Amino acid sequence: MAILYPLFKAALTVVTALSFLNAAVVGSHLSIYNELGAPTFRSPRNVLFAVVAGGSSHTSWVAQILNELSKRGHSITFASTGSHLRFFKPYPQMKGVSFGNETVDYRLGQHVIREPRTWDGLRSDFKLDTDVYEPIYNDMKNVISNQQFDVVISDFFCPACIDAAYAANIPTILTVLFNPVSASSESTTDRISLWLRFYKKFFYPVQLYWNLATELEKFEQQRQKCIGFVPEDNTRHSLVIINNLYGIEEARPMEPLSEMIGPIYNGAYDPLPPAIQKFLENHERVVFGAFGQHAAMTRDEAVRVLVGLLNALETGLIDGFMWVPGRSIDGNARTLFPNTVTTASGQEYRVEDLYRDHPHARLSSWAPQFAILQHPSVITFLSHGGGTSLFEVSYAGKRAVIIPFFGDQLANAVRLDRAQVAVHLDISKLDDILEALRRVIQDKDGVLQSNVKRYQALMQIRAQHAVARGADLVEEVIFATKDGILPHRQDVAKKMSFLKANNYDLYLCLAAIVMGLGWAIRFAHHSWKVYYQKITQEKKLKQN
Image (cartoon, rainbow, N blue to C red; front, top):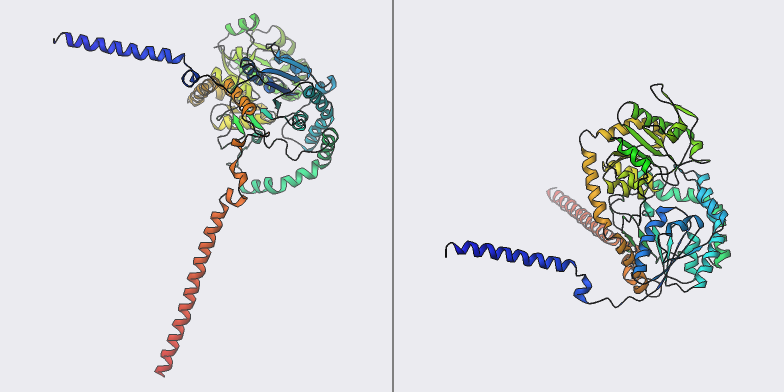
């Protein structure tokens, strides 16, 4: 028996382990609905998505959500300007509608935004919005009138689309790549001085109105003309779906009607072309640079970036680079450069050679960004700091130098630099690009790569169910809306007075109590003092 007992115990252990393994395997094939029963809320509905500008970062991730909704049985229509329809080609089951004429599409595509924003730049933004509002509104109105939609999903930066849905009394969801309140270098007050906070709170709104009142009035007149009235706040009940996450965004409380679900990546990525594959395989330390679809540089800026990359190549910091420079402020990429550029060593390079067959340096008008970032030869990414690019470089686990141009890019660069995930290089300091690259590539204490690995895990974890979560939110609006609002998401603070919602009434009570106690103590002290003086005086009189 002494011999059989250990054998019996071992056999029992194996059987128990196999039982748990079998339960785990079976459980992995059971969804929550196998436990609770099939969902009964869902029935086919009509969903409309509208977008007019912003390129893939405003479109591709939403297309992923729409594709999931289509799989759940819903009918999907997307309405967009011609240049954005290409993002829906992988989804033939969706119905596409082109709106906004070619002039509108071209003007939106060519509009350039740069930081720091000037009043003239902001006026130009308002003027563009005013000019394209009516044709977009009318086309959106026609799309809505031709089919009954249960919900409209609109890009955050399409006011005409939002207004058309509001006028038709259709629940609206807004989609955006970043929290709209984060589009500045300091998205919280944590590092802002008292005086700057005071200025932004009280003086900047006055300054804003003073400089933009005329353009704002013209825009409101255009809305009045199209809608027949000007909604006071047409998005106050709209759910906002943000393709972002804490880590890229600053950690802080969110509004009940705002949800960050990111990162959502593109549905499909282009593979490496043979020429790029060969280039990468022939090198071991490559910097890849890309500044997105909308970043625009001056010739001087482009030359300084190119010279910095060539200097890094000549010093042996890297053995190759690839760069997609994008466009110039007044033209395409080829107008960015002179015929030749000269490095710090005095070496002269023909720019045309860099676009063709240089063995170690490549300029290109396009490249499959994500595929390149995933190649082991790429060690650093030179980026503009757009949200999608940061998602991709983080997923690939690569370090980055960020040169922001506008919008959320500046905030992204500042935050990731402070988190020691990337290095922020201001566009006014492009002469320091070699030093920034050296700092990132050498990473002497290993802090950058350690943090990059954390972010890689964060991105990969969050990406697993992001699309499903986005589709769930759309269905929440479709099936849980009451009279055009989501009652369960209404901020309870809005039902309270300003004082109660911020606990100011408690502070006022405390102040009243303290003041009352202070007055009582002062009164008691004064009374005692008078009494003491009276007693003292009486004693003196008796002594006399």
